[in-house]
Each structure stands twice: as C-alpha cells, then as structure tokens.
Image (tube, rainbow, N blue to C red):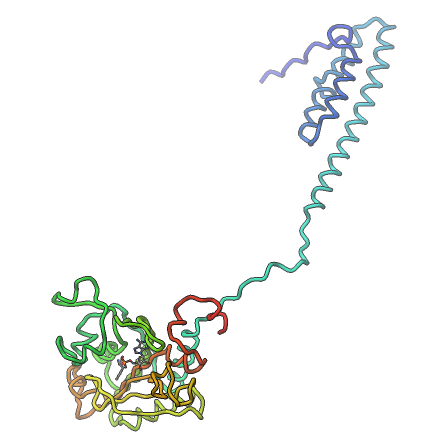
Length: 357
Ligand code: FA5
C-alpha cells in the first residue's frame, strides 16, 4: 500500500497566522473535557500533520531573517502547548479519580436486611410426624392426588350409592362422575392402602403423607384442602393392641406424655373394627368451646383393622395375615401443638400468622 504523502508545509504568512493558531488552540483546549477529545486536540495541533507542526516544517522555505523570528515564535508556542497538554491530561486524570472516590462503595456497611424463609407450620409438623413413624420402622411412600373412583371408593368397599360416600363430599374431575372410570381429587390417603397392597407382599409397614380435597363448607376444624398421613401395617399376628400401642406412642411423642388421648368406636367401610382417636381440647381443657364443637375433644384420626375382604381382594390370605390402618389430619395436629384455634389460618397466606413459626 502506498504511503500517504505528507501535506505541503503551511506558511504562517499563507493562510494561518501563528496568533490565530495560538488563540484557536487555547480556546479549543479549554473546551476539552475527556481523554478522547484531548487526543483529538493533540493530533490536530501537535500531531505529524498538526497545524503547528506544518508551520514548523515550512520554516526552511522562508528567508533567513523571517525564518529566525517565525521559528522562535513557533517553537515557543509548541513548548507552551505541549506543557498545557500535559497539565490538562493531569487535570482530567485527577477529576476521573475524584469521581471514582465519590462513588466508591463502602463494603463494610451492613446490607439491607433479608427476610429469612421458613417452613410452613404444616410442613414442620408433617416432618416431625414422619420422623416419629420412621423411627418405629415405617417406610414413607407417596401417591397421586388425582385418583380413580375405583381406588378412592370402590376398592375400599364404598360402592356407588353406598351411604358412606356421604362421609367424603367429593370434587370430581370435569364430568367424570358419570363416566365409566370416574376421576376425582382424592378425599383421603386411604386409596394408597390398595395401591401398596396390590404391589407388595407382607410384611408391610408404610406411612403415606399427602394432600386431600373435600367439597365441604369450612369451619374452625375443617378445610376443603388438608394434609393426611395414612398408615398401614400388614403381617402375621398383627392385632388391635399393636394399633393402639402405635397410636398412643405416637400421640405421646408428638403432644407430650401429659396429653389426654381417647379411643372410641367409629365406622369406616374398609376397617373392622373401626375407631377414632381424639385429644383433649387445648383451648378449653375439656370444658367445650367453639373449636372443639363443645365436645372438649378434637378428633385427629380414624383407624381400624384392615377389613378381611380387602385383604382377600388384593390376593392376601386373610386367615394368615391381619393388618391395621389409620389416617390422620396434619393440620389438626399442628393446631393442637401450637394452640391455633382456626384451621383456615394455615392457607390464608397471612404473613402475620406464618411469621410466628
Ligand atoms: C378418613 O379420611 C379415613 N380415610 C381415615 C382412616 C384411614 C380410617 C384408615 C380408617 C383406616 P376422616 O374423614 O375421619 O377419615 O378423616 C381423617 C382425619 O383427617 C380426621 O380425623 C381429621 O384429622 C382429618 N380431616 C378430615 N376432614 C378434614 C377437613 N375437612 N379438614 C381438616 N382435617 C380433616
């Protein structure tokens, strides 16, 4: 590539007088406010083809006397402009440093406070309950929240039109209630009893935590969505005494040894005999109040011995094997542990409530 020829030297007497160059250079330098502009200024006056450089190069063509006087002026101006350039450069550097210092971050200052997340009270109680059962030798298993009518009802000895269906008001999936294989949001965790027994052989000891849904009006102890823990144990020689021992031990570990526990007969189509377990009301101490529906007791679970027909329906020999099952409400247990008088507080998303746990 051919080198660009140097432009012809400029005669101060031609088109630019040194005084004009001097005054323009100074006023432009005054306006410079950053490093890039300063470099452009330097190139335009002092660079290889800068206006002052061209004047100096053109000196040789001047008569001697003129060369001396113009040369002296031009060299003085060059020295002065170079000095002013250095000064400006230093000033620009200083103001950049000052700007940096002004916006410097003090890393020793404490940051804005962070809100610590925490586990929901239901989750905390559920974990304690599962720890308790795991320490007794139960395994934790989970199952589907959307369930077939078959597992939620039919296989549990609750056929269509059986009055026991009224115990569990159901949320159906679309118009599935009328279809051949109706689907629903499970109303309890008991369908997992069947699913587990269909897949495993005794001995079985499992607990199944999970959400359940009911189409019912809410009140201080009833929510339309709640968490249950199902328990199932099947083996040779399992008796009602094992069931009562397991549940009493659980209740005393979770609520403390002084809590009053009451077992009573109850009816569930999939157990025989069936029972419920109640704990004395923490609010009224047994006197009767709004939370315990004036009974002095709060029901926390249903339970019983697995019905022999159910054992047979999954292929177990009911002469050889027996089993117990239970289903408990986690929110009710959390209420009793923490003295919460209304179950609806759990899922109303009020941070003033949730922040207390
Ligand atoms: C059942 O759901 C049976 N599946 C329990 C069972 C399992 C019996 C195995 C026998 C053998 P029940 O509808 O009573 O039963 O509910 C069991 C527990 O769930 C109740 O004791 C209560 O603690 C809780 N629970 C029931 N309905 C609600 C509700 N709407 N809101 C909050 N907790 C509830």
